[in-house]
Image 1: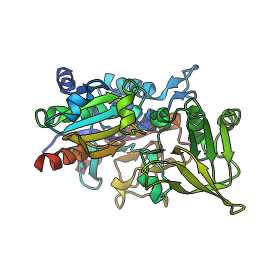
Image 2 (image 1 turned 135 degrees about the vertical axis):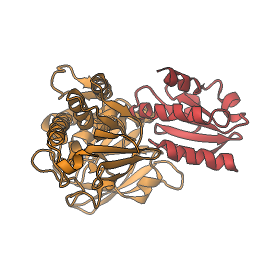
Image 3 (image 1 turned 120 degrees about the vertical axis):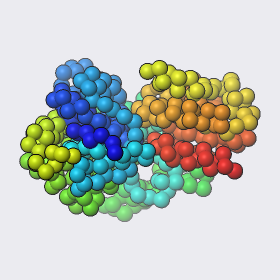
Image 4 (image 1 turned 90 degrees about the vertical axis):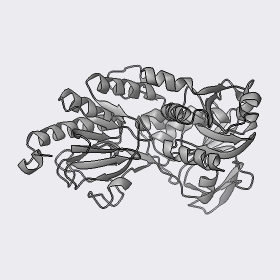
Length: 315
Length: 116
């Protein structure tokens, strides 16, 4: 039987690594299972300008490398691997990866959220062949070409501006006439002459699945009903995120959109199980709020372990 | 640390210049991982690629191709996203995987083509 850990952290974005840092400094020797998308969403960004303490900004991947090293410095054990199943009701809690089973007295869930897709069959077929959810990865392949970004939030603005470094023209497609993005990000995008706007517009189809590459998209204006065929070489989808909670369905209380419901800080409905970061936050979704909630989860877990019920002490 | 270095040693470096010789003319199946320095997910995939190179040493050749430095091969195979992994057998693409993928899924692909 494997050793029982004090704390296992699932996920390695700002929430998971901050939880790891705090629980390592509390001498709890946390184990972090970093997951397939290790480092979280910041690994897909470029310059982060709203992380306090870096007045000139810091590159997202660099920030995550630093956070990881800082957690390790204080004794967090971070392993590559993807959790395949969890039993939060067993005592101790069990967490399985494809090749190992781990046990812990407390669990911190920091599995974050992953990019949402439009849900068109053509989008799935052309993923990696002109359709992308990662501007920083794939923008490079569209030098001198016309592309589109779908979405109206901060990520969509950031991607559109970033992509103008490569593309000759970026069309921003959004289904409403107002944007969800913050004013500073909107202003940056609006000031960029390479960005064209198609508001009140929805992507109906991405062509050409027959050829296996993106050649155009069909846009429908949802106010006028008019359809337009826009020739382009790439479509970047930035329409938001969906929480990674498939592992916990049926075990933890989730809201209608699949987010883990927390109360009194980071507590879930199961004692000893805590959640932090985007997996439980559909409102703020910032690196700094994720890190803050990771700290809360570590402190809550520490307090729980100090007052663990007698009958669980033996495990 | 020592084991990490040893694992990295098993990962080949493919280029525009050596691609024909090391990939297309190889007797063994070859996994080519298209990547770049500025691609976060590619870096995340690094340890998986290194582990596979070690586990399948002598059976599957595993290596990386930097798309920045080797645009001919990237263009030839119409790579539009990274990471992209192409598995070659006898000079032909037999599997194509785009995006972050678990070690288990890649192993399943390897085993499928080794078994045949």
